[in-house]
Amino acid sequence: MKTNEDAYGRQLLAQYNNQTETAEIIERDDGFIDTGSDAGTYFRQYKEWSPLERRAIKLARGRVLDIGCGAGRHSLYLQQNGFDVTGIDNSPGAIKVCKLRALKKALVRPISDVDKFEPDSFDTVIMFGNNFGLFGSPKAAKPILRKLYRITSPDARIIAGTLNPYRTTDPDHLEYHKLNKRRGRMPGQIRMRVRYRRAIGAWFDYLFVSPQEMEDIFKDTDWRIERFIVPEAANYFAVIGKKSL
Amino acid sequence: MKTNEDAYGRQLLAQYNNQTETAEIIERDDGFIDTGSDAGTYFRQYKEWSPLERRAIKLARGRVLDIGCGAGRHSLYLQQNGFDVTGIDNSPGAIKVCKLRALKKALVRPISDVDKFEPDSFDTVIMFGNNFGLFGSPKAAKPILRKLYRITSPDARIIAGTLNPYRTTDPDHLEYHKLNKRRGRMPGQIRMRVRYRRAIGAWFDYLFVSPQEMEDIFKDTDWRIERFIVPEAANYFAVIGKKSL
Image (cartoon, rainbow over all chains, first blue to last red; front, side, top):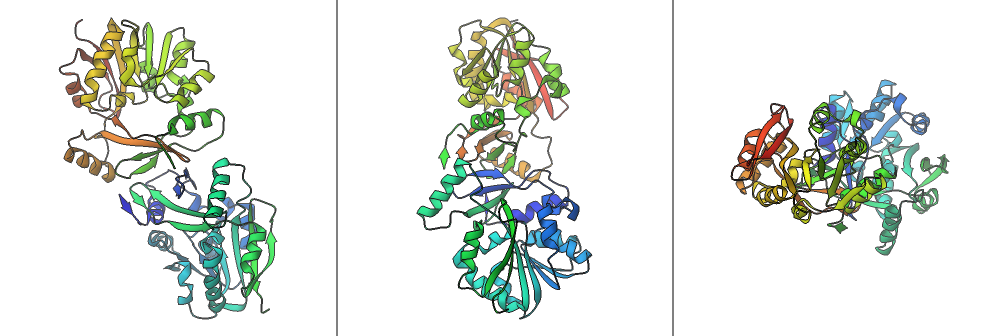
């Protein structure tokens, strides 16, 4: 068994090379396991995205940072449309796939290292595919938001998608929310890892929040939610701007 | 986390109730994990079976015992065609599904307990869906074969399907064969368990063999392989009769 491997990236590489047609497997820290995105999801073309994502991507302006870019589906779309876009992902395999797919700017970099970019490097930060979750927890979000503030222009925006964790009636998920509360975590703070064949990815926190919870996270930060896109839906987006404006 | 649960049966029940559309998840004891049969596979109608299974089922005669009947797809087909058929499975959930699907004779019973049937109860034993694997190992097969001898008629046959484990070039599988040899197991002796949501099934051995290996298993038993059906293929069947004849 190989733990802390780049299971996610290996899977994307296998998908890129047409070596697998199986869905990804995600394990949660209560032992719950399920298939996640089908093979191909991370490679979907614009026309195959959800209407919500197609709507949200229209808000990108200027120089774009794509956090958790995966196989680069959003970055490549923006690049093809003339944007100066940089994709980052903490998965070396994912970034390898992005480069194979001709994404010009693709870097292995976790969200916690966004301060490695120069000040005022980006005008838009996109966190698609529920990647608001990469903030991990309200506490972990604060320093990341400070770093994002520094590396972006004064009128920059973060466009981030998430899933409202309370839009479920699944007993296993509701019980997990309770478990999280008991251990002082947010109900939708999912500790998970990717498994791909013999590779076992590192555990990481992925945060799902309600619109109200997201509002709370931005209190005491230099960012504020300008508006939500379909906050009443299970999947929704937030457009987040700098408070100084 | 709930271990040694009837993960397989829970999954079949969820499929029966249309509560899931995801493929089963199988974990091997080297940490290799993958999706197995798609949702629906265990419920396939005769016309959706492989040509090999459609060919093999024609050999059933008289009273039939279906070992590892799952959701009952083979038993139900035989019942519908006028056979006296009994399905057994060690999964309570599987047997519940069989009963919900109106299989008249369905029992929770592991293959090791086939001696609970009266002598001369069956004329055909079917082990479809690679269920030759339920013999587990050459050693475990011997007492089971003696029990099957007792509960079947003098001219009874076992019709068993398997997968030739050497029909792979997958490095992970080839390495697993080597691991098995090092620990004194047959290369195709797969120690696996089913995972479904939070349920984790018990580990069990499932045996894949080449035609030659299968021949060897029947040495020193009262059974002999009468013939193979497409032994040159990855999936093949054996028709096994009593030596006394």
